[in-house]
Image 1 (tube, rainbow, N blue to C red):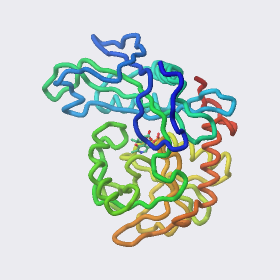
Image 2: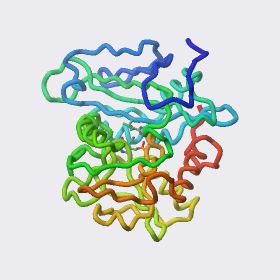
Image 3: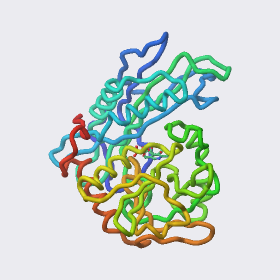
Image 4: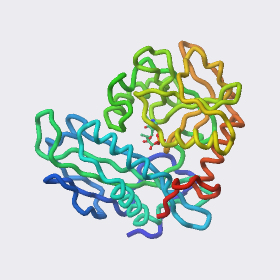
Length: 340
Ligand code: PLP
Ligand code: COI
């Protein structure tokens, strides 16, 4: 076990660093085993596993935060657990009980405590729970065996620049179909987003924004984060659609906007040709936290919201409150924080 880790916390990006221990539980003969921590970061599975061929898998992402007192805490892990159950139902995998999911996350964070970045560095320990269909199974049907695994890695900002605004471009591609798997956190959605992301990055954008797959007129979300805006009359607005991932950060921000900032909140359609109604915009998610959007390119025009270089005042307040709650500096609503 490496209790002394040599990491420049302030310089971390969003990439994999091998930590000491990860959790594994196996589903066989209709039940989950006890689960345990293991050292080996490799998985040994059948070449005929459904996860490899038919994408029968799903994953989650949540973080462990170091408070200024030195404690470690998780942010709303029950919501990740429930969302994983929804993803499992969509791709016919056995659900992991909420308590088992949270216990696995706590065990992993505790066992890798040396990798939880110090308070004040802005860095966090990112936890990646996932489930895969395994075993010998070549037909297109659900596996009979599954692995639930949780690993962790210390991370910094997902989008380069952290709280500095970034620009996005509207993709001509869809990340999900109207009645597809967009609301489930399954790997296939992300495989399909790699090419549109590469096109966006090639044009100098941080990522792309997807429109609704049925009409291509409404903002859906970013490749790895939800979208929100602040209207000129000071409302927090965010898209409502069955094909976006129900972001825990976005629902937390809706509560924060209302309860902490006193804003009106609307989950509703945001039309790409009416971006003028917004004075600020941002991407939100566990990895992205809040990433201010400077501008969005659509059909050759860059629509700038607040500024391409400065963070808007409402976005800043939302960020400070969310960040404060996650790191234990601002009082959290009941049930949002779980101590490790
Ligand atoms: N949308 C997509 C496609 C994502 O991958 C993520 C990341 O989890 C989010 C939104 C944000 O969700 P959350 O706030 O629960 O992390
Ligand atoms: C997250 O925010 O947890 C994500 O899953 C986004 C991305 C890294 C896939």
